[in-house]
Each structure stands twice: as C-alpha cells, then as structure tokens.
Length: 501
Ligand SMILES: Nc1ncnc2c1ncn2[C@@H]1O[C@H](COP(=O)(O)OP(=O)(O)OP(=O)(O)O)[C@@H](O)[C@H]1O
Ligand SMILES: [Mg+2]
Image (cartoon, rainbow, N blue to C red; front, side):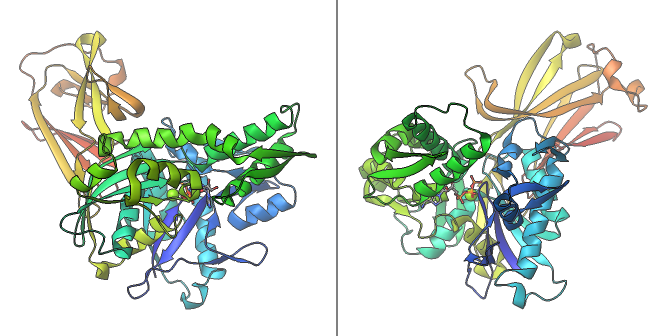
C-alpha cells in the first residue's frame, strides 16, 4: 500500500494512492467516531507512554496530555538521542517519534478505513514530509522514526512542495503558459512555510522557500488564552489542569470561528468570560503580519496587480491555521483575487505526498536546500575563525537523486578543525544568522603522521608548508541529509562523517 503521510504538529494526516485518486484516510477515534486524522499527542499511563487516540482517552481519564511534541524536533540543539520529559517519563526524541508513528501504523492496520484492504504483513510504503527549512538532525529523526515504526520510506519532501503538487493536481488549468508560478502559504499548528513553485505541466521546481520555525495555530491559541485570562481578571493561581482545559476550549472556539462571529464564550475555571472577535484579531494580526513579512523574499514588494506581471497563478493557502477567516482576509487585502484557499487546508500536504508516492502520476520535483550550510574553520592555533558558505539555501536538490558538491585546496595546517552549521540567513559580514544549528565538529588529520587513529582533540593546530591536496565532498541525499567525505588526493586516505546525528 502506498501512502502520503503528513506528520504534523497538531494532526497527522494520511492520504492513500488509489488508482489516480488520493483519498484522505479516516480513523476511528477513542469515542468510536470517524475522523480524518490522528492527533499528534502523547500521554503517560503508569510508566508507559501512549499516543494518538489512546492519549486522548487517557486524558479523558485524568492523564496530562502533551501536545505539539514535533516542535521539539525543530530546536537547534536536538539530536536523535536528546532526552525529553513527558509528564515525568524520560524518553529520547527518537523513541518518542517512533512510538507515535508505530501507533499510527497500528491504527492504519486495525482501526481505519484501509484496514480492510490491507493484507496481513503488507508493507506500508510512505512518502513523508518535513518543514521546508528542517535541518539535518530533524530530517534524520523523522526518517528514522518512520523506519523504526515499520514504514518503508520511499521519499521525503518538503511540506509546501507537496502542497504545490496538490494545487496543480486540483486546479491543473489555473497554471498555464502565462501564469507559471504558485506561492504555497502553509500555516500549520506549529510552523509557517512558504514556497514559490514554478510549474511546467507536471514538472515542479521550487524557486525559493522560506519558513518560520515557530509560527502556527498554537500561537493563535495562546493569544486567545491570554485574552480570556485578562477578561477573568488575570491568571491568579489557576491550576495547570484548568489552563490546559482553557487552551483546548480556545482552540475549539478558534476553529469554529465563522466570518460573521462577533464574540467567543469561554470558561476560565468556573468563571465564564466573553472575548470579542475583534480583540482576538487585533491581538493576532501581528502573527499574520509576520507571515506576510516572511513572504517578502519570495514575492518582493508585489501587490495584486503586479502578481499578474510576475506570472503568479495564485497564492494557495493551506495548513489548518489558514482556515482562520482573518488569514484569508488579510491576504486578500494585499493580493486580491489571486488568493485561493484549499478546500482541505489541513490535508493538502498529505494529498500532495500521496501524489508523489504514485509513480503513475508523472509529477516531478526539483527542490531547494532551503537552508544554508557552511563551516567555521579554525585559523592559526585557534587564534581565529573564518566562515565559509558551502551550500547556498537556493542549492537545487532532488527527491530522486543525491547532489554532490566538491571543493579542493592545499592543506595549510597539520589538523583541519571544521565546525559545521546550518543557518536560515546570512548576515552583512557573511556570517550565519537567523536559526543557526550546529552540526558538530569534525577534525581531520592533514599531516600524515597524525593518521593513526589518535584523538585529535589534544593536538595543537599549527600552520604547515606544502600540505597535501585535499578534497571535500558534500553529499545531500534524497532526504536532504548532508554527509561530508574528506579525501587526501595524494594518497587516497579519506574520512567520512554524517552530520547532525
Ligand atoms: N477552521 C479552522 N480555523 C482556524 N484554525 C484551524 C481550523 N482548523 C484547524 N485549525 C488550526 O490549524 C492548526 C493545525 O493545522 P495543521 O493540521 O495544518 O497543522 P500541522 O500539520 O499539525 O502542523 P505543522 O504543519 O505546523 O507541523 C491548529 O492550530 C488548529 O487549531
Ligand atoms: Mg502541516
């Protein structure tokens, strides 16, 4: 069975490849209702962690519900072995993600509308996604989590690129020779991503993409919680449980907002309060503005009229949080009629992933690295650092093939000390800025006499004359994970390091 799986911050959504159709899989929830997602949540029962609907059930029975754990993967300091605390249970991030995805696999096999057609032991082949600007460790964790949960991962795409597939599949005629570009605006539960995609028939090329790691529906919920607490005269010493209940109420109230809704009724513990929708929109307008500001590098200062000239067929709103009426309103004020809202904002990515999983669809993609990659090199005996950009954020990458970049130089030191980082932006002096994620330090023995396996951490770095001719070879694999091989071209000695594990 071939699937597209969108592991989201709030909800995980699965679409099926079914003879040219890509229906969203429905699951039976803990109350026996059919729903189109598995909630990305975890709770503790005794010493064990339970996930998805089991976690909702546990929460009904008094456990604390932990939401949005996917956000922790985006943190710059994570590796697969990073330990997180879930209501008192310490677990590695990899085990946490694997545990959740194993629950998803089990739900597909036993309590979904595809259970019946899944043969015993049939392999679940999946194309999965990560936020466009996900760093190497985040990609690696996601991939390993799916594999550990028993999926065969046949591809990994950037989330907005997948949503771009869904748009052109749904509206093949809106993209034509005069309007070849689509902007995908994906406001999810925890992240905002946007991509400018150039479309030529079934070929899709991501021209550029941007993202904000920590902007999503969760932030709108928090704003509403704040307004409700203000209306009740402050948080006082509101117990955590009541705060969690309030947060759930706020999410539900936000999700059911219609364009004509005037106010929202909420309960802060036992105190009923009313929050005016205008106040909520005023408090959250800066969040929408932040997403618009992030679009600037993709669209320049284009307004509605200029979109036509720039061959933009549309701005496609996907992601559950773009269901908020305020979002479409603000975008239409700026860009006019070219703003389209997906009929299934939360499922667009999963459907696009299923299209990618379907070889018969003929869709094809060239993507971008979407984050810069570079290295700090230690100069003379640690006296200074220089920064080299190795891969630009606009570096073309492919979900079907590895991309290799090499550079050669004559070594000028006895030991090479490389501190690799991924970064979202470059500063005026060419230094990495924005989200900067360290990928670890690699030491390389340039001097032949040091190649005996010794620990190079204790070796003093000094300049040498006439060092060997070296080659650095950077490979970005199909999943966007980077490895480096450093080779002495004189004698063939080499060393390989996977970064970000
Ligand atoms: N009708 C609606 N109006 C407003 N917000 C909504 C609506 N429906 C869902 N949401 C919000 O959308 C968010 C979830 O969106 P989505 O399912 O696209 O995110 P995700 O894929 O889980 O997260 P991410 O893509 O950030 O990892 C939640 O904050 C949810 O409250
Ligand atoms: Mg999403």
